[in-house]
Length: 322
Image 1: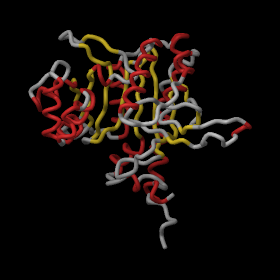
Image 2: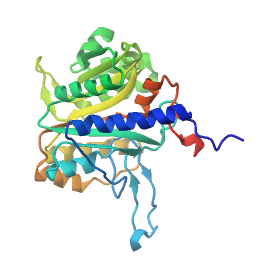
Image 3: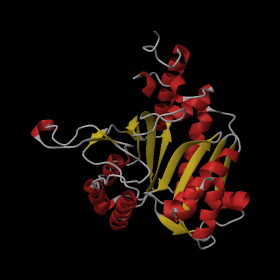
Image 4: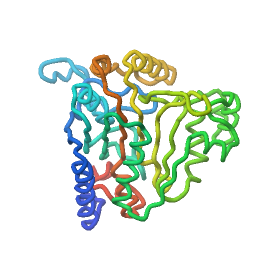
């Protein structure tokens, strides 16, 4: 029996330790404050496409009260509360959790690096992300495209202005007939992940100005062509999604509206509704400074550095070994 053994080799375990130290050193040299935030809270994200892990069913009696706890899908909400309290530039390197995610590139528990820069826009943060990757992979090629540029190249359409029916038709061709009446956001996401992502170039590819319907927690603006887009970006390393960043939304009323839309989307999808994080909304109302933030999957980064074929090879114990 060898099931008790770790998936990672001892050499890679040592390399993992070195990379974690390098990541911390990168931000400490730039005077970012490392913060340690809760991984267990009474609320979690409302995003339709992210499922949280409930750890304390109602009636558990935690501290003598009737509470359901959720393992956090990222440190984002707590970090934004710190930013609103005046923390300044911060980073967090720790564990995050998502339900239903297990496979070659997914694990229910994973290591996430998240950082925020006050007074920076998303393009400044993309440049710093590229610098970070270059410290670990010095010869890496780096390319940067707008979301619209890629859709124009591969589909000859403008993703921000194309009719929903046209996107649904393309989604059916790329997926199945089930996409014939799906939402704009979901159709665009399918087309990008199934058609565009596998054709991205080697190295680090930064994609910015995502559709407004995929804004999540990013602010929106009009681009040079007058199109309404979200100030969101994603980073792909050798065609593997690595990081997701925003020029952060600071308007509490707009965020509350987006949470409500999330709840409606979850209801339509038959998913359980999540209680809205009122502490985050209160922090936004108090005053979140203009800032940009990004979350990076450390285990996926290690896969690329080590040339591994699955997360099990770079994690001490993946879900299959727990």
